[in-house]
Length: 81
Image (cartoon, rainbow, N blue to C red):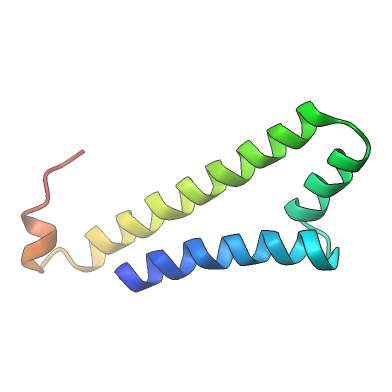
């Protein structure tokens, strides 16, 4: 499960980077378009949205990990946040 969480973070970074470089539709292209148009507040809002998406994905993976691996001692000994 830790590998899946790390892979999800890397996949998000690579997807945004690919959208920036290749120009495929998505958050990366929107960030680039906003930057080129001089809409810096929109650009920073999209960067913030991308960061929040990463946090949501991480929390979702952690919740899934706690649910699926509740039997494992490393999850049972975890201090609730």
